[in-house]
Length: 321
Image (cartoon, rainbow, N blue to C red):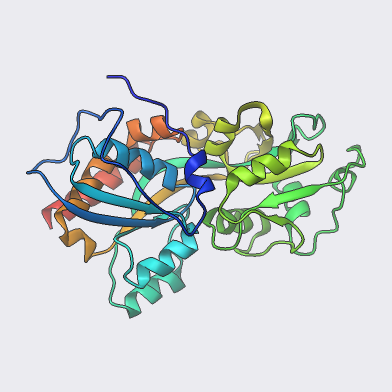
């Protein structure tokens, strides 16, 4: 079966206020499909701009199996998605990081239960302009020196002795982004801790690509899936991992754990109320059972064996329960 390679540029450009209702047509579907009769009804999804392109592919393929199910995918960021989810506005919340304790408590206070399901893996890449020939490999401490709240860095010469006196321009997502939370936690040691004078791109990772490609000294942190789509406009640098090795982000290094600490898993969170809807459960069954193919089509990294086993175990408990 032949499939089209999906892109995410249209989805990201839509912004946080737009809901994308995907047409009930598809370029193809995998062989593993949900059991049961034809379904109808709506599924409302919102959250991470990183996960949304992955879900978009799943929705397109699922439409070939259940064409009467209407699925909308919003892009409010991980934090914004959880806010809507805990308000009871959505069936499924997408996240590029695990739910925070305060978010879980907000859902509990509203009487909304949920389950976490892993869908794919992604690496968080530190990218630079292709004309940047000096920053081949950086330590986490050097990356942090550029981004932490008390950063004294104005040029690349401030990052490491021997680097040129090239002004640094910083591009990164806003505080509603799971990518923002993950990066600041792993690199700066505190979720949300970041210098205030960077270029805030909101949920539009394509804006970071545009910014970095337009200035020799620019840098950004964005999901690896967006780097692969950007091609030669930008380049991802190597990061010194926990073993002291310079490692580039890739499918292999994320799956093996070599690309640490910037490899991560991506999630969806269905609510207990939504799971009572047959169309929601059928979509999740399709999504998990076909995660490897969906990830490949969307330019993401599939779950490893242990992650897949955990996701299937949780899915089966939902189906049985």
